[in-house]
Length: 86
Image (cartoon, rainbow, N blue to C red):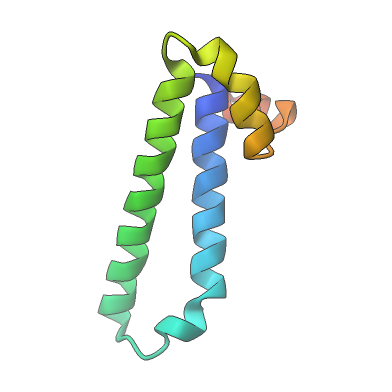
């Protein structure tokens, strides 16, 4: 996985977690097991979306897409370095 794809995955994961926290009032009526299930499904969907976009960035036209995806999702060069473990 390229640094930009990994940074994108991390970014999507962070957005998902923040939205789950923000929407906690809407899931307050759920029992803990059901809320956990909603959180898990949301995380799976987020990972699938990130994987799809990441695969496109890592694919044959990735050089053309990397800059666009970075701008679209506000991925900074620092995030790509941190995602790569630099």
